[in-house]
Each structure stands twice: as structure tokens, then as C-alpha cells.
Length: 101
Image (cartoon, rainbow, N blue to C red; front, side, top):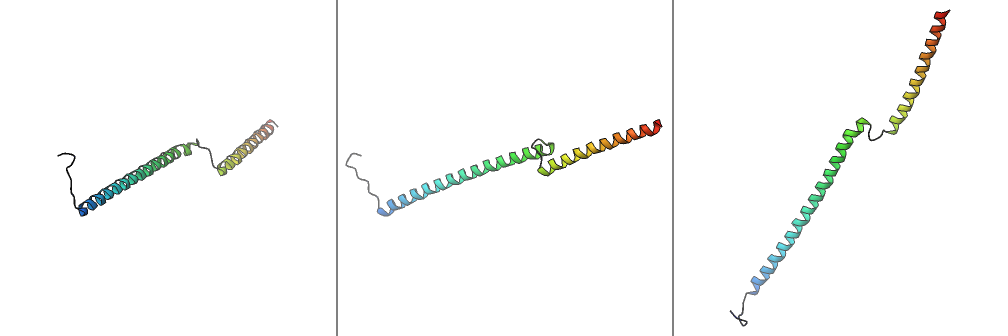
């Protein structure tokens, strides 16, 4: 082999090599793109599951706040408890007056 050595290849084989290389490169990039998509999708699902799990644990404990309806209901219950306490005190006062007479 020297500088003047010639390599001859039929044009049909050269075209086949170029096409095969193009197909291989395109396939590689499509597989890489699909893997990136699936990894990103998996990350998003993992984040969603973690948030759902955190919500599932913290919501019943009241650590994530309350619904507006729950807040209104709590206000009404507190008001009714206060009224009930006043009624009990009034009954106790009346019983003490009637037993004292």
C-alpha cells in the first residue's frame, strides 16, 4: 500500500452504505428521543405520586388547611358551643335560685 493505491467500490454498494448509515443514525436519534420522553414522563408521574401521597397523609390531619365550607362549619359549631354553654350556665343559675328558695 502506498499513496497511489486505489480503492474501487461499486456505486451501488456506496449508496447502500450511505443509506444504511443514515438509517442507523436516524434510528439512534429516535430511540434517544423516545428514552428522553419516557424518562421525563416517569419523573412527572413520580412527582405527582409524591404530591398525592403527601396530600393523602396531611389533608386528614388538617395540616394543609381546610375547605371554605369546613371553616364556615367550624365557625358555626363554635358559635353553637358558646350558646350551649350560656344555656347550661343559665340553667345552673336558675336551679341554684329555685333550690335556694
